[in-house]
Amino acid sequence: MCGIVGVVGTSPVNQLLYDALQLLQHRGQDAAGIATAHGNTFHMFKGNGLARDVFRTRNMRALPGNSGIAQVRYPTAGSASNPEEAQPFYVNAPFGITLAHNGNLTNWERLKDELFRIDRRHINTNSDSEVLLNVLAHELQLASEGLVLDPHTIFRAVAGMHRRVRGSYAIVAQIAGYGLLGCRDPYGIRPLCFGVHETEAGTEYMIASESVALEGLGFRFVRDVAPGEAIFIDLDGRFYSQQCAENPSLNPCLFEYVYLARPDSVIDGVSVYGARLRLGEYLAEQVRAAVPLGDIDVVMPIPDSSRPAALQLATRLGLPYREGFIKNRYIGRTFIMPGQAVRKKSVRQKLNTVGVEFKGKSVLLVDDSIVRGTTIREIVQMARDAGAVKVMVASSAPPVRYPNVYGIDMPTRAELIAARRSEEEIRREIGADALIYQRLEDLRQAVRDCNPALTNFEASCFDGHYITGDVTPEYLDRIERARMQPRPAEDVARNQLSLAIEPIDA
Image (cartoon, rainbow, N blue to C red; front, top):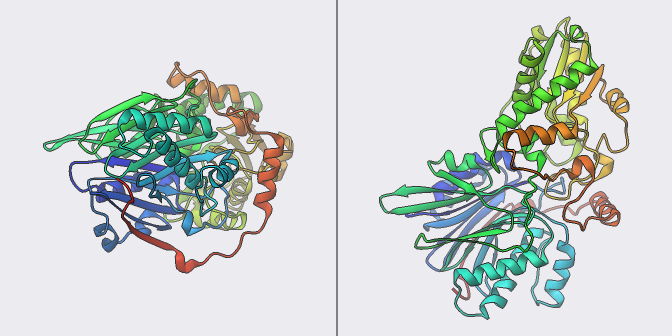
């Protein structure tokens, strides 16, 4: 999961891109980067950390131009990040291209080998995004025959990319001297939308992972990018779009609605906040069936993602709702933090209890999801330490039993508390007096209630069905083995990468 944004403006866009990254910061706290286009030159700055820590005034001044792209990132491998893998990435042939990517390619290793042996392209990192960029560059070379580009040629190249690439990907890319490209994989797994802003100098366009980035910066949301669709805005502000996939189908990731997206976003016609309210209503019925309501004194959310569901659950069951945990907003999201030890240590730094709300009470804690179990185990113990006589847990999401290979940091079965345990075993493991999970059919219906046109979803971490059709048990075994291997120490002196690049061809 990452946050991406691209802008074609009528004035310098560096500040606009930075502000958009602030609005998308929840999608990645590991690294941030901006690449702008000024004439035929790209200017790029990127580094590890939050956007506010990566960029200084001198960096922003070195990012001129009226178009650009940006990304906030977290590593799907879940360990220390290589600063060289911060995005955007850049390639200079056959056209200067910068690219930022949200998602994960399931066949990137095979593509990397093909690029070297057949396409004669060298990949310098272990990032699937660099592979994706080079596949796009190669397809542009084939489609254009090395000559001038036009929108039809660009869309033909995207179609070629779709035929080669597997997995999830939403991208924004700049082509030097031509404009801004955005596209979404044929399954529509990861979100992407665009909007416009009318100015006296003309129309400005923004492409972003979530609608909150558009609306927060004064852009009018137009629509989501369709699965397999590509949109292109040239440097004169002309807009083009075309379906580039042969058999596209919309399968948005259910975890976006449970946890990943901001509640004030709308993704594929679904209000994230509205979906979370519905999750609370369906979860309330599961609680009603599992626990005598007289045994629950108070309902409490675990901030922040579970708050709408917890409030709606309490309302539906007629139970008191209280805020028993106060969040330190200067600590990162523990789900995204790389490394199990870091996640565990950060829980008590991140949350503190309001003792009076726990003392002598039976509490029902509502969490958005339970992935590894580390966080919820610590929180249950915190509730007991604060004086709770009974601690029950309800999860807005079903048990996470399978690896996610489409861009979420849960790739190995060994790390998932529900992978090989029954619900009763999980309850004992986290130390709760009761554990209630959302049903998968209710999760699907909660989202569908907000947009009845949605029929299919990407739910592999819950049901083990991988919609791209190329994820085998052998593939899962391979990524688990790769994850368990120790990674080499990284050179912290290379934490910041600053480039000013002149493309070979534009």
